[in-house]
Image (cartoon, rainbow, N blue to C red; front, side):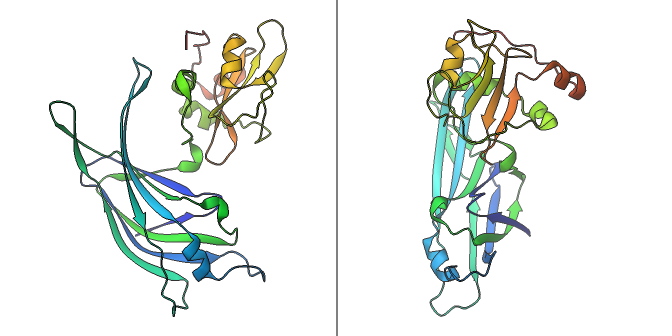
Length: 266
């Protein structure tokens, strides 16, 4: 058995499913109170306010076409309903989420879901005083995806897909360089950057650098690399992590190549 936690700050966790008979067993969930202040709501009221969903998903990304070519999802509601006479802050779930087989294409080829996520869907309304502590058991080649170290924010449009393909997560986690602010606006169009990507890059007609959204960066030349531009990706922790366009010093220290600084038509 293992333990996982979901909260307002970390409302989602993902697993990679490597086999058709992978499954996740949810034994119970504890409602842990982090503080004892007078305004904390009772754990039963908190439990009733939580909407917990599991989602099985299957996604294929075509590198040649530069787009998602197939995506299937199936959602499962996980009820969290305490007994009205219950005093202990724990709910016995005893729920098993099993992988599924489905058919794709004209030849009816069978596939299985390759990801499973659990998410508190209304996390913005949750109390900061509670954490959901789950007791789980994984079966059949299921691995936990460290959600805080990656980004589940979907790319927007062709430009977003193009930039997502450039992300070098191995190098990003070695360098671990974060932008100093979490909320940023584009210096070109003035809009708040809410998409997956932000670029600290050189403007086309000058030597000045500017913070840019994905499309303004393309208009300004769209280059990456030392002295040209750095690509930052919005993490699930809400921070901006450098994922492409590493400096020469970073490449020399951490040992990788970052030689694709040419723009294409995306």
